[in-house]
Every structure is written in structure tokens, then in C-alpha cells.
Image (tube, rainbow, N blue to C red; front, side):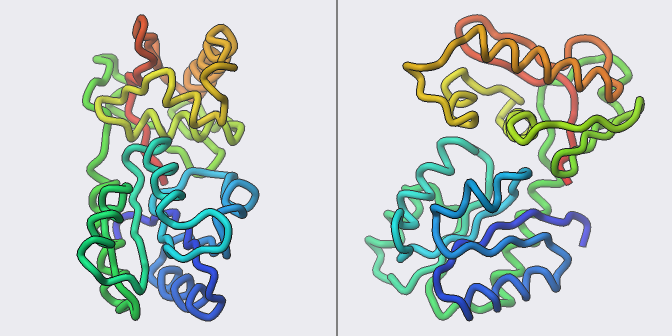
Length: 235
């Protein structure tokens, strides 16, 4: 398999969750299993996620609400919905809520694993469309959870920095608006201090430079947000 994915499976049925996680792990992916949406921040917040596999009938926050929230924060993350709801109106709602794939139970594990291969190909092909023209853009940085590796060595990132960098690297054109970064950082817009956000971006720029980038790695876009100008490979 060319690309290993970081996958989070949110499923309250213990046996099904264990079976799904085991099958995906066997295919070489890094998998975390959770029983509810409320566990997501505590258990899966330590690094970037490529694909969320979500049961719709979850205790607490349901799968539809969770998918909508994830899609707002991570525009390009993969979302697979697993459910016993098979009516067309349910499928339409699922896709409108952010699902890339809607699978009805009982789920064929081989089909699910094949879908992960499709996400892996998509991730491998995803690079920012607007890169700087210096030599550093020809050697992509590599982000493995909280460790950023580049020509100048390895740099440790905070969880928030890794989330910001991952989202920027996967956003269309490498660009995110201020409100999107606020959601990634779990900050309400009315409480957002733009100077504080700029400080976070400055620190992230410095760490990108420490890893070996040249020039401005993240540009400020007036009245819009920020754009990344170097390639970052998420592994």
C-alpha cells in the first residue's frame, strides 16, 4: 500500500468496532476506535486524521451532527458513514451532511478496505496548488503526527500546530479563511483575537523554517486568512 492512513472509527457497537479496526489495521493503516463522538477530542486529538468512519446511531452527539462538524473544520478529510438506514432520503441526508461514502450495514469489510485505498490515492495526490518557487518546494516536508521533518532536521509541533498545518496542506489551494482556522483551534469567532491567531501563525512559520523551508512558508491574505506556500506530505 502506497499510503498509510490515519483512521478514526466511531462506532458504539464494541464487536463491530473491534472487527473494523482490526481489518483496517491489517491493511497497514493506523486506526483508533472510539465508542462515541464525545471521546474524539480526548482520544484522537494528538495528530492529524485522514478518514473518519462514523456510525450514525451514536449515543450523545449523533453521526450526522458529527459529520457536519468535521466537514466544516476539515474540508478535505474523508468521511465514511456506516448505518442500518437504507432509505434514499437517509442517504441524501448523509451526503448532504458531508459524507464521501454512505455504506449500509451489514458492511462488507473488503469493500470498506477498498474505499480506504481510494482515499489513500487521493491523499497521495493532494498537494497545495500554489507553491513557492524556491528550491524548498521541491522537497516536501513530512508531517508524521506531531513531528515535522525537512531538509534541516526534525521539529516538534504542538497538537494545535499540527492540526493547522494539516488543514492548510489539504485545503483547496492551500488556503483557509480565518473562521476555518478558528474552528480548527476550537475558538468561537466572537472570542477570536486576530493578533493571537497571527502569533500562532508566526510560531508555525518559524518551525517550518527550522525544518528547512526558505522564504515565507505561510502567507497572510488580507481580510481572508492564510495560505501555505510549501508542500507538506501528511503521513
